[in-house]
Length: 486
Ligand SMILES: *[C@@H]1O[C@H](CO)[C@@H](O)[C@H](O)[C@H]1NC(C)=O
Ligand SMILES: *[C@@H]1O[C@H](CO)[C@@H](O)[C@H](O)[C@H]1NC(C)=O
Ligand SMILES: *[C@@H]1O[C@H](CO)[C@@H](O)[C@H](O)[C@H]1NC(C)=O
Ligand SMILES: *[C@@H]1O[C@H](CO)[C@@H](O)[C@H](O)[C@H]1NC(C)=O
Ligand SMILES: *[C@@H]1O[C@H](CO)[C@@H](O)[C@H](O)[C@H]1NC(C)=O
Ligand SMILES: *[C@@H]1O[C@H](CO)[C@@H](O)[C@H](O)[C@H]1NC(C)=O
Ligand SMILES: *[C@@H]1O[C@H](CO)[C@@H](O)[C@H](O)[C@H]1NC(C)=O
Ligand SMILES: *[C@@H]1O[C@H](CO)[C@@H](O)[C@H](O)[C@H]1NC(C)=O
Ligand SMILES: CC(=O)N[C@H]1CO[C@H](CO)[C@@H](O)[C@@H]1O
Image 1 (cartoon, rainbow, N blue to C red):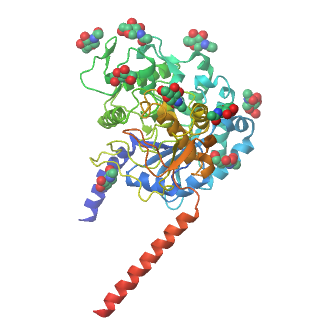
Image 2 (image 1 turned 30 degrees about the vertical axis):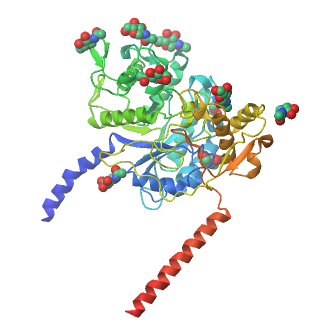
Image 3 (image 1 turned 135 degrees about the vertical axis):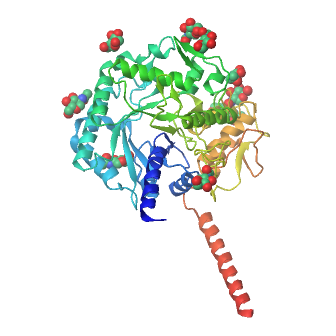
């Protein structure tokens, strides 16, 4: 190809490359797990599924090290508990930026491609009350100043993830949308700050919770189904719950003077357990509908052909330690299970390929803890409840995958959760003599009695590696021998 023609083609592809980042789909990687998949394995899983953007809730050094050199575009987070400190101390903000951004930052190469710093994790959630409000803007300003001082302000943007309940509309009509009245002043300050620094508005959209809370919203309307009864808002027609929420926000932004504000959907998803209608098959329909809708770039009635700048799917993996104050489904948002196995057919990109599972995952041995039916079981329920208060029994809740196994199956489920969470230690299957360790998988139908992941490098891992080495050495030896004989 002649050089000038090559340059011409390069020009043709540039808008194409830019276009592929606008409207990008990323995922949220949370680490509230008792036995997390090793960070290097998660990065491998992200890459094998063509995920290009990832949002974190904090700045865990092990996670950032694993992301170094991966070329993934990263959002790091500041937990709500640190906001007070950063509001009152510019110095503290500077050391956070130094330790957690500057140290890792790069445009590619060996470091981490950090794009956003998320100040707080939904600090305006109504159930938090006024705990964090007074510190958010001050903390954001100090982090911004620290980034400027570190010469990173043109590349790393400061954002504040806002919860689904920061904006409301009494009649469910988008044209009646507004920010919650207790946030009037704060939202104006936040938006003034964001627009001054050309940062987008980060927001959660939660069609699952809208469906749970609003009798007027049907499941089909939530799942992007064709031929649903639309919701009309004077001359505007809404065919799905996502557009309805999105335009409610657009109206809220316009009402306080920011009609053009860029929007990033910082969190959206569908849980698969722990509540009615939280199933893998409904989640699959929702996710496919969402991704098709975003890829169609149709936008919404108030922002036609102007879809969100980016969308982060919540979540990449299940987390068994996530807080369940807002519901038992909270531990089941993953597109993948805690051990990196796809829950349903789906694809993050435009390809028709299915999700790729994590490979060579290391589990604890195939052992479970169940209830010994030969004992006096009168105290079993109390023991089970105690086990559940520490471990994860959310699959037993109404509508959950293990809600139909009955008594004493549910007691065994509780015992097993506790046993796995304690790395299968023999004394964690005692329960006053009611527990029994078994090698027969007690799982029934959809109800999986899980085995936790190997986390510490215990002897069995070393033994497995040693074994692998011996096999490899023997294979090498024999192949040499064969080569020698020919
Ligand atoms: C990832 O992208 C590559 C190249 O576009 C493609 O060949 C592959 O099938 C994709 N994998 C998945 C899981 O989508
Ligand atoms: C936030 O920090 C500013 C500046 O240090 C201080 O004046 C203000 O009182 C702080 N806000 C709260 C609620 O502590
Ligand atoms: C960096 O982030 C980590 C994890 O969020 C936190 O524990 C640490 O305190 C941060 N560093 C500073 C100097 O604040
Ligand atoms: C439900 O829909 C009806 C009719 O469209 C409307 O009058 C009512 O306000 C809606 N209720 C809620 C809670 O949105
Ligand atoms: C917030 O704004 C609404 C509508 O503009 C107004 O009715 C309300 O009084 C305001 N609340 C506060 C606390 O300023
Ligand atoms: C909503 O609007 C559509 C198209 O404008 C119309 O066909 C339909 O009858 C309207 N539905 C209601 C319930 O008003
Ligand atoms: C049940 O628990 C009570 C109180 O801890 C205890 O006194 C009782 O002996 C237990 N019953 C059995 C059958 O273990
Ligand atoms: C187990 O099931 C029984 C009967 O359905 C119920 O009373 C009990 O609360 C359940 N226990 C747990 C831990 O789910
Ligand atoms: C539309 C739909 O499937 N809704 C279901 C949600 O869950 C409840 C409780 O299991 C069912 O009654 C609904 O049919």
